[in-house]
Length: 314
Image 1 (cartoon, one colour):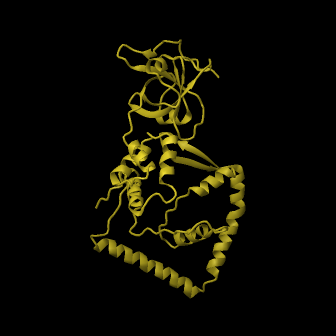
Image 2: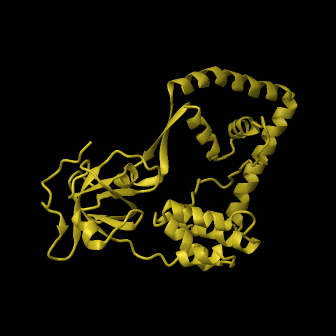
Image 3: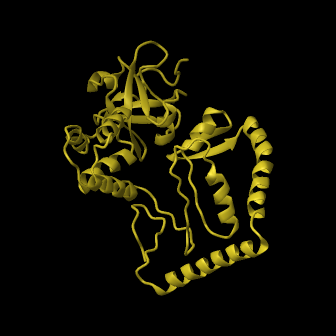
């Protein structure tokens, strides 16, 4: 595997304006979610900037910039004028093959001083957690930085006030979704109970009764991936989104289990008499009307909209 793009020195190195540029090349190396850039030890940029392996560098292609971890390589598989990008870096930067990429030192992260303070047992507040989580969401933290932060917070090292501050910071950098409904319900489970599969039973029943119950999956998806029942393809430009697809094995399992789940749901409802089912329907309908009335008449009920920053808008 060798990167053949242009002759060494063509359109690369340190230009008259002092800008260090290399040509982008997609290596096809999967580094999971951490962007990694590969550069020759003897390339003009490494020599002029004194870059060493594991350095954090900023890559700019056009109007897009990312921060990546540098891996310095030896050998002829990478040309001197080339910046090899991992799959994560390639998708995040949106570069084209052979496009000139500017390589500079990553800007210093002031929030790392807060992580260091937490390592030494100091309490953090809203401002500190907000700075940390903002840099995490922007992709400025390496896996090593993330591991340090998580370790410093794990094992009951956060008091109640810090837990609230961290939660608020995570909300602040995320999106809120307006489902367009006056009443949105949820179902929570204690978790950690072997054989507990109540969610798969409760959610379809409640949803079939007309209530909106959005659900997310995390550990369940990881389990399905491990068992090779689904595939997960990351969406370019946003590592939080992915397309999930059933494999042939997963489709076979679905076809076998779905009739059983459907029959079990019907059996559960069969345990209720016609009068009880009608009463359940009536109770849910009454709750829905009551929720709509509360939203229509009360001004202190906040509404959330899908806005960056998690702000409330009336």
